[in-house]
Length: 231
Image 1 (cartoon, rainbow, N blue to C red):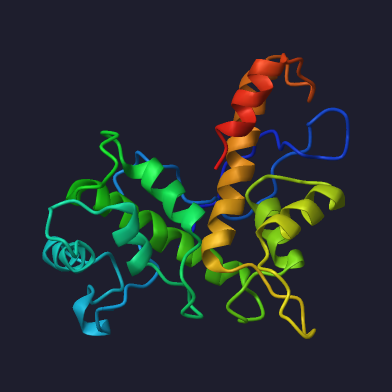
Image 2 (spheres, helix red, strand yellow; image 1 turned 45 degrees about the horizontal axis):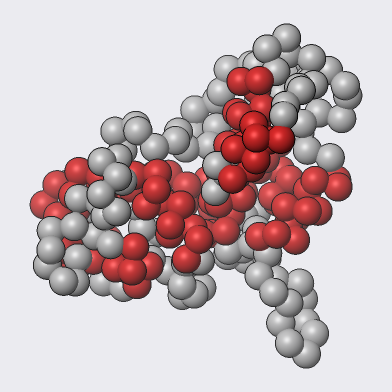
């Protein structure tokens, strides 16, 4: 179950002052650092291998999954190993940029790989995002369309303009299918990255908006740091 967030200022509202209260809804999974990966592995556990109440798998099961991903038996998981293991609900590979983002978030010792303790946090983070994805995928299509994305971000407290929403959708939706057909939706991995991007940029803005009026003044260097630090 998601926990209802507390009321607080919501950034991205169309007014000049960001005074609109955050709507009642579901909070996104907390960022890396919480005692917390993959939505699916190529070797997925059966239903009986998780806890009886649908909770997190035990240490032994997580260790087995870790070893399955650690194909070179180094005791650490590389970007390439994680990329080979992570797939979306439609069996498409995770976008490599999403995999790099996840590695960067959970590689706490900056070794370029993740060990078992870091993997546990990564696992829970992806599972929590999977729950959010399923909740906001109201039509059960396995992807997130523009309306569902706007609903998710609004529930997370980000009231973005239609122009911004259109830019985000264009940035993270897969390329159109050749020969026409319906516009493809945003897959799980890209949904996570889109939400993390909005949160990262919003938090960077908020730290500089010291008087909470929705306006900041930044120099070129600071602006570039904000943008290039985003996933």
